[in-house]
Amino acid sequence: MDLELSEEHAALRATVEHFAQKEVAPVIGEFYERGEFPYEIVAKMGAMGLFGLPFPEEHGGMGGDYFALCLALEELARVDSSVAITVEAGVGLGAMPIHRFGTDEQKARWLPALAAGERLGAFGLTEAGGGSDAGATRTTARLDGDEWVINGSKCFITNSGTDITSLVTVTARTSPTEISAIIVPAGTPGFTVSEKYSKVGWSASDTRELFFDDVRVPRENLLGEQGRGYAQFLSILDEGRVAIAALSVGLAQGCVDESVRYAHEREAFGHPIGKYQAIQFKIAEMEARAHTARLAYYAAAAKMLRGEPFKKEAAIAKLVSSNAAMDNARDATQVFGGYGFMNEYPVGRFYRDAKILEIGEGTSEVQKMLIARELGLR
Image (cartoon, rainbow, N blue to C red; front, side):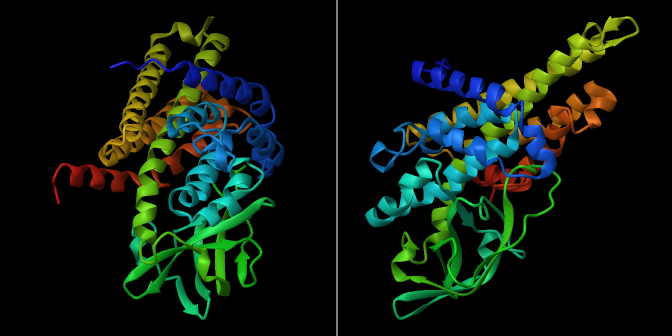
């Protein structure tokens, strides 16, 4: 088994690493503390083609693959997770459902701007009474002539309220026994986006609650087959878990990077703290976690690209990587001591950002449940 990156993948990884270090790292802390969405950074990432990595050129994409997206997410998250999750959600949740299940007309209308990063899409699945139990959807959509009439609400929806958000695809009950996905363009009458949440982390990303009060959209805004919306999203979620695993690895590796640098600079009792075995062992364990988690998401991505079943591997990658991110963020904060508790240092952001990785796109408990099911324990 060859784990060496191809020439194209290696070049992409290096390009995104340079961008993250030179364009994101110097300024993202200010956006984070203000809770401000970094439109300028998003525009630069769009110009680089990051939002179009896995999409075909005919729809404005870069003609790459999903592993290329994962590599980009890892390098972005080594510096900041708010920027990384904006790309991950914009691609995996906003544009990918249209690419996978949209009609030719829907793809032609929406994908070029999404793939260029000129516009962002969002996916409205989670509700106040249905997170891990997404099948408990209460939002409804009924046909009235040639229009869907949507009523309900969604919560914790990423990229849903920015100035460049063009659409939200929502899951809704189109009958008591079926859930469908429907595209709702931004600005549709009756579609209201709340103020931004006050969040523990991901402070420079956009997360909102959505409300639908007799929202009317054309019948042709149905995405995919009627009654297959939930099943469609589950397939998207498997891919998304690999992407979140890559993002988690980036955060875990960023913790190692910052800790190694600080261990050389910080002195205690007459020596750099990196001279002490207690610090050496802690950072060594952090590196081992990041390395192991990277192998897990590489393995899941390899099966995905070969067209083989990868649900178990995606769940393992997401579970292992999010645990690594959380553990490394805690340990990096300890290495930094009091400075690790200050938001002016990257590890302070990493600590705040890590926890959501054990929750979003399937909690750790859900990943364990999926792994057990794949082992035949039902």
